[in-house]
Image (cartoon, rainbow, N blue to C red):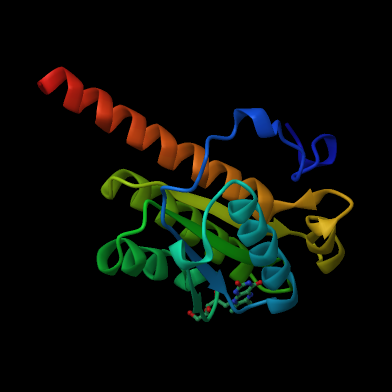
Length: 171
Ligand code: DLZ
């Protein structure tokens, strides 16, 4: 559904599993930091709201969205998180950078999802202008950070559920 038909912060809380047993990594891009700080705030609050604890949320920064892929890979390699949320904001400018960075981070995060056995969530805004980004970082269209946190909890839970099923069928 297009973002203008769905508020990014609207979700059915009943469908979100408890997050208290999971550890989360959040990798945040420093580019457009006013926006990424608001997305981080949304993601962090949503994780806490569903039972995650502050000690179980590791936040690290990378220079720009292009670096999110490697930052997220470091999280997966060097920490014991159950899910990684990648937060960035890419705003279309006068240069072709927009397309290159969008393609790179989309492919990079997709690849991480299929390489590592934990979820990597795409909390990256790709907008034509700053106002569209503000609208999706706590503005009239909600906060993409909230959406990313919910996706991370649901995917960590799914992973855990299926691992346990596998273990039961082994025994
Ligand atoms: C260079 C660049 C440009 C033009 N625009 C953005 C942007 O809108 N959002 C973003 O997160 N990063 C941008 N960057 C920086 C690149 O992601 C990257 O950090 C640099 O090219 C260094 O590799």
